[in-house]
Length: 174
Image (cartoon, rainbow, N blue to C red):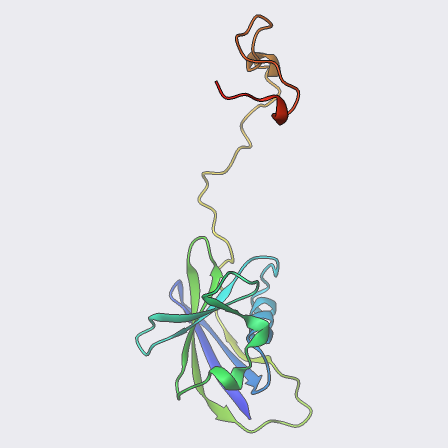
């Protein structure tokens, strides 16, 4: 059996992607086809969440072991997590800014012989950028070769009251 999914974004009203996944594909397979279709950097963290009908997050599925409250994407078979028609998921592709795709299971279809799954079957609109920059981390105008600063400015004078030690074993509490 093939599951059909639709992904939308709140950032771009014209964005829509439709995916088909084999019942035996994993959430990691789904993650990979999303990353490929959007031309995103696969080294970035991402998560799926199963949700209620009102898009409230429930269980989290991650790329890496993040603790007792998560399940790894590669351990989750699609057929095992579709518990009702129109099952909803949130795919978080920018964890630091909590930017997401809203994904809904829109039905099933018979498998088409010779077709490789998962695949994107319909593509409309430009995907949102994977990472947004706030502009606050632009250090291009800072000159770190300034002669007014040297490492000696932060080192103590030779006549310092600081204790002498070569390693942590020489440290005594004051």
